Image (cartoon, rainbow, N blue to C red; front, side, top):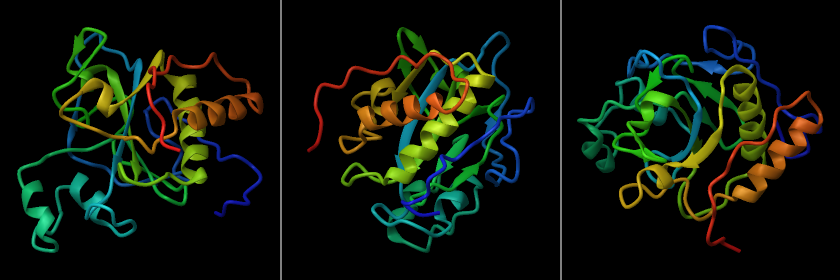
Length: 212
């Protein structure tokens, strides 16, 4: 996949909450459980992650979500030893997507969190990690994949809003960070839906500042 790819990526979510296997790489994580009775996924949470911080590529993110990270491989990893975390999806720098948890289930991505007065955002959210950091731009391919995946999730779940981890855990989390371009994400989603039978756009957070 290159920046010149003309056709947008396409994803479809099955009734089991998994993307079709030809569309994503599946690496099931044990760090998940059932959503509470009556909870539906109506919030999308955007994160960023890189392991080690600022380094892209490799298998360390998948290893962390799979509880098989070699904590001796890098000094930073020692602080991750007690963590048991996951996300539903990871979008790589080249736009490739890895799915770790069925979107029907509760992935352990948000931690202590609150959205519009509702705590425990894991109960009612779907988490998407972008391979990236708070300190540099995200490639266009990631926005394209994120928009396509968002639209596929909208067609399966009653998503009403999207927020960054920083918005549901302010003061504790900063991702996806100041270099995540919310306007570009919205434009990519709108453009994708023009080429498909789309739904109404999600409610996006109000962004006070942008990085030029």
